[in-house]
Image (cartoon, rainbow, N blue to C red; front, side, top):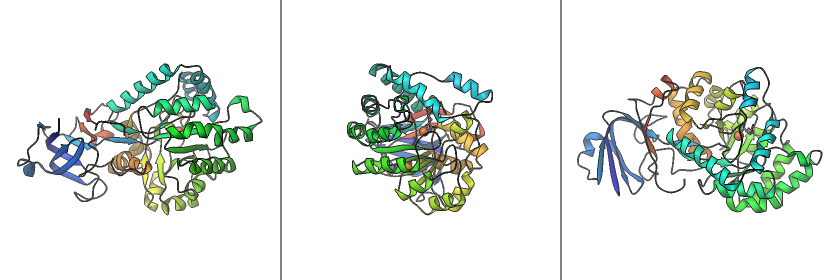
Length: 390
Ligand code: NIG
Ligand code: FE
């Protein structure tokens, strides 16, 4: 259908300051007109009465919000690590080493197995309101397995990240430099055609600052854009490196010094929080207030992966950010939509103003507040998603 008018919306979150105060740009008693999968008009339901459309839907006072933009996920893998989760919930600590068990399962899976697991997770994410999702490699760690991970991911999303530098695989134990040469050489050559981003897990048990810089530089030289896993497990140079490379996003941001906060606040690098990872590893949550109050742009994403955060559910992450990270419900929703779009350097998603992609959610609730107020309840009535990969 060419045009669709959704009207009698009790609360329309546009994320555009042209329509209401920060941070959500809310219009009450609103309507939205979609033309060929693009937002063509937003305004009051009263004014919408004069508009013609091929189809009209009256939503009876329910809230409409932008589709969630999940800017950090690891969805190409096989196997499960529920045993590791059980051990953690009995007192064990999370460590980067668990990644290797998913690497073994992923390497022995067929393309079809990886594709159908990815498709299942994509559908799960979409049914909970996610309309754009980033997807990393990082569980193959050979030239062939990284390249096929990204080839399969790129069948579903344009937001693909090459994460050959996730951990050093066991066959390179004691030859870490050789692995970095592979990641920056033949593996990069094979992966770059399917990747938009270059990512590195810069942390304890993964890659040190020197290797991180080498990998980012090589990726950028191949035309990829930088983003980084930084400061999840400890303080370190990750945030400084992200800012130095003008990375689109520094992800996790759990252990920050004041100079990390200052560096992020005076940069274009988005601070992306992954609160489901702290939930699932029973770790300290990041200090979101400090970053927001310093003026940093922030995002919330799922980090969906079988080790540290096996959820595709953005409303759950919003509820965690509100309850555990002192974010207001409005800040958390903005971070999960517009913030995610900034973390992907996209201006066509994460908001509902004219010319945006028609990606939006009809809630089974009168207000977005219910996302955190009614945790664990499925409030997604219907997800509208523009055709084509996002
Ligand atoms: O973002 N931190 C690095 N990678 C994932 C964890 C991956 C795993 O444990 O399998 C993360 O939390
Ligand atoms: Fe991650």
